[in-house]
Structure formats: structure tokens, C-alpha cells
Length: 341
Image (cartoon, one colour):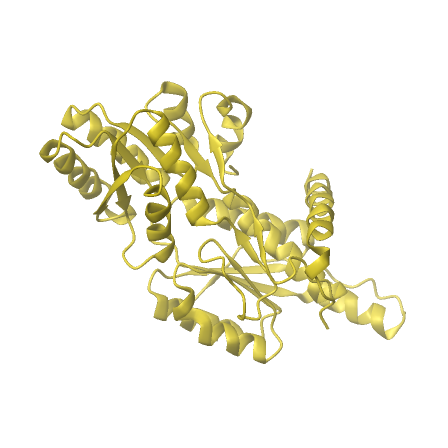
């Protein structure tokens, strides 16, 4: 099964590479996802290049660094993708996270100090990470960004794996408007995350938006109470747009507590979101495929490390947005329950 999954991913990658070939060029405090991950070399003599590739394949260590808050289940899916790639490729993937951008930058510096073979980093605040990303690239460590600001021009990273948050927001606003919503509460659960603001701003192109900052995934009860209080105070709000799957379930409960008839939609997917879509409590979920955001960059870095491949042409590889509704939820609901969608 692992081989089939890897072959399928590489088969998909071949199409991505073909699509991006016009701009591609040949490149010249954490915890490990598992305690093992290195394959021993065959021991047979070969050319110097073959030996180098065998050594790179068997001993490669990649760092996956995110801005995840404690308790945010979205990032468990990203982490699982990285862990599965670790197993499939026989490498080591070290995962670490910090929601504070300065601390996240420090994690990049730590990976550089450990002579990482490649760094994957989420970009909720790309500007706050530019210096450390540049430092990594300056010493020859390849970098791929994920899940956040996708405008990577001039950064020197190989590619960005994620979605355009503005485009996704526009789609969310259109879904809300088509459902009859005229005033939508956009729930921001992480302070200082520019990607969340991009989502709200995108939605605002198609429907009236009011922003509400809540406590976040570290305090779901507090977030639910804040949403409920807002709905009770303003009965003109007829739509709620969540930017996180756990906040989405809190919004559904807040709607019930407030006696509101607002439609509720969310960014991102989870087992609970899938069930809420099936029951009709959620209008839609926007799937940006977080499992792919964890898995694919490890594959891309390993291809760069062992075969000098660069994919993406310095531009983003889009993993979304895809809208999950009652019409198509059955196809992926089982995967959502398994924690891969």
C-alpha cells in the first residue's frame, strides 16, 4: 500500500512537472515523526555519483516547521502527510511548530544549525520568516513553503504547496451569496495570520463581511461563546464563515445557542466537518488538502536531494480550493474520518 501511494504521488507529480516545465530549472525544539527512518546502503561498490545518491537517500533528514497552535487538528493532517512520506521514502522528517513568528523563525535557524537536507515551512507571516529562509538557502539548504502566503517570487524557495487564500475566499463568498446570505461574519481564530485576512478579503468581493476575532482553537468554548454573543447581538447576520474546521463546529453550536438561522460554511475539512455537511449543519467545507501539503514537499525535497530535480518553476503548486458539499461529500467522507482529507 505504501508503494502504491508513493507511485501514485510521483505519477501525479509528473503531470505537475510537465505543467510547470516552462519555468523549471535544474537545481544544482522539534520532534521526529518516528525514531527510525534511515535505510542502510546496499554495501555494493559503484560510481561516486551512485554512492552519493545512496547516502543522500538513506540518511536524509528534512524539517517540517509550521505555525500550528496547540490543539489545532488541521495540522495533525499535515503532520500525518509528512510522517507517511517519511515511511514511504525511508527518510527522517522532524516536525516542529510555533504560532509565534519569531519562534517559528528560530526553529528554521535550528534546522539550519542541524544541517538539514531540506526545510518545509508554513507561511502565515512570510515577511517575518524571510531572513531565516534566506539564511537557509544561502548555505545550500533547499526550502519549500506551504499553507500561507503563496507569493514566493524573490524568496529563492523551490515552490509553494498550498492554495491561493484570496481565490478561496472569493469562492466562499460566492457560495454564501448563492445561499442567500447578505451579511456574513468572518471568524478569525489566529491573530496576525495574514492568510486568514486574505480569506475574509476575498469573500468580501462577493458578499458583505464583518470580521470577528475569537479566542481560537486553544479555547473552543470561549470562541463559541464569542460567536454566539455576536449572533445574539446582531440579527442581521445571516451567514457565518469559519476559517478552521474546529471553529466551524463551534460556530454551528453557537448558531443553535443563539437561535440564529444563519448559514454556516468553513475553510478546511475534518471528520466532524464531513458529518456536519452530511447533516446539513454546514453548507460547505473548502478542501486545500493538508495531507498533500505535508506529503508532497517531502517528495519534492527528496527528489532535489537525490536527483537535483526542481518542480514548480518558482511558483506555487495549488492543492486547492475544492468545495465539499452535500453533493460530493460521500466520495471523501471515509478519508476524512481516517485523517487524510
